[in-house]
Image (cartoon, rainbow, N blue to C red; front, side):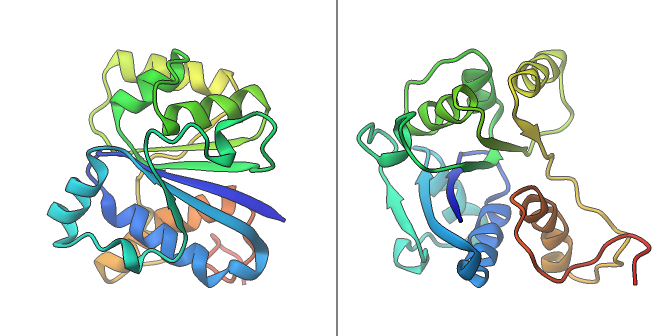
Length: 186
């Protein structure tokens, strides 16, 4: 079974995190546990972009950004997947340089050192060379980069459907079994 950490940073794109969290809840039968951690700015950006932040509407346990006693802050943890969504370029830089000064960057460091599934969902554009080099470092260390770049093969008609195309790609990388659009398949 899967034990998943969802880290939400202060990058624009809180809707991706909200949709991912809600989608994971729909497939809870395939998951042992989901833990959530928000960066200091993530809650403010969530409130700004989505008009409110209400922790009681998050269906999973939320850990404090500085809680180094959380279970997934250690290499002995049984958490085996982590998604940073959306991932700010500042968080990306810290992860790529091994700066584990908060729970998000520490947990990402743990995922890399234990060869577990780390998925980074950057929500920035355009990229500069520093961003690209940081992504390269993280990929060489074993992480996956899944930019928040929607697809249009499924002909989405609403913003929610467009957002879901990115979340579906994340769910694929988490190996969550579900019915979704696949290019040119019946």
